[in-house]
Image (tube, rainbow, N blue to C red):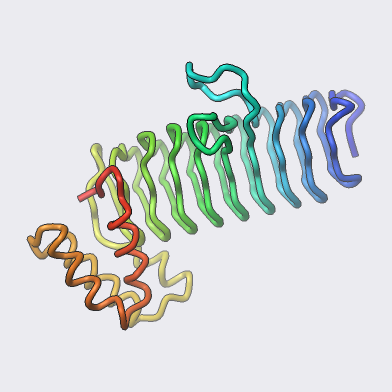
Length: 256
């Protein structure tokens, strides 16, 4: 399953059915799980852990040192889960000791060509990053978020679950769950109704989320006042709890 023209370090640990294409380079302290396919001309440096049934296309570069001048060679990690698709020319760097020391990619993510994921980022599950999306360091993206092509995310920002960004969006503040954002700088443009329908949210749940969005973005209330009202309704609307908790925990402030 390993092409004779590939270079695999003797200390790398690959399951027996891992496929490695020609001219790919697998470095030391790399572990790759069963069913993963690695195309030609891929470079994977360690320490990196890759799970099961991933597809990694040509010219991707995974596990490189962080592009951070404070990094001095300490042992940090890249962890990639299961069933991810990583397309051409994607770059994903390891973490830094200034943060948790790990860059983490969850399960079922779809990472398109020329995406860059910097040090200490975390992706949950079922995230889509369209072509040329760029994540600066320490960015966190929750499950089912979709970032359109050429989206750029400032360091330490968070992108909430089920959110959606348009093309060529500049994100400098947190994007709450369910929110659609567009423009440069990013501005809220409603909720991701189509995505919620595809994920089997009920009509009532979507209506509740729309009402929550209106409180935050259309009511002319201060954010703290809107949160008081959101907390009052969230006891009977669990889907709103996620938005409340996200906004309350925001360190950079939210896109508003």
